[in-house]
Length: 248
Ligand code: IPE
Ligand code: IPE
Ligand code: MG
Image 1: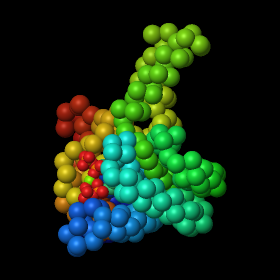
Image 2 (image 1 turned 180 degrees about the vertical axis):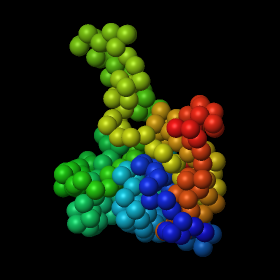
Image 3 (image 1 turned 90 degrees about the vertical axis):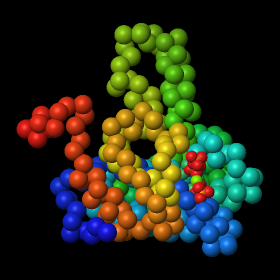
């Protein structure tokens, strides 16, 4: 397991994205209700946010609830919504103290009104902070996001005279919910699943992928260091040859 001394502080990923998976199985293996796994997962969120802020990672994006997760049993969805909002409210003073700027990406319109209002209040309270950007993907899926982007472009063509030749990669990026944020350098997925599950499909184009069997509630400081250490052993070639990359 890697430790802090092994991390090259000059080559930290600027943006780490995490698919926090395995809460349910973690609980079930222990004979507990799934919701207790989610509750335990909140502790892991706290640990990872702390480490990211300490290291000086600029963006941490956490996949908390997908568009597809709305299809889970109503009791689990309700429990998760309560847990999200209670946690965010409880943590807001400490986010403020630690200069963390909170963001939410996703279809917030689908959230229960009360949860959305409370969430947005916390976002507003941290909006002028200049430290870690903590981005919670909530009711998010990449296909939803890309569909919305196409819709916005069609409207811009109709109402603002957008032309086909105005459309380039920068323009497409500007229509996404991550507009203005750097793309993730490192994607971590816990609990042994080897898939992307509709997460940030555009933005992950050149991310380094890191998968671990550790379930999310067991993910801690050392596991995070290990992922960053593994990332730092990779050669990011962006289509070039290894020789070209070494020369630059
Ligand atoms: C991830 O854990 C949290 C959410 C998707 C909300 P899961 O709830 O997916 O846990 P498993 O995959 O069933 O173990
Ligand atoms: C992905 O986890 C979404 C989140 C972590 C919020 P799931 O556990 O829902 O993913 P699949 O459906 O098994 O791929
Ligand atoms: Mg899962």
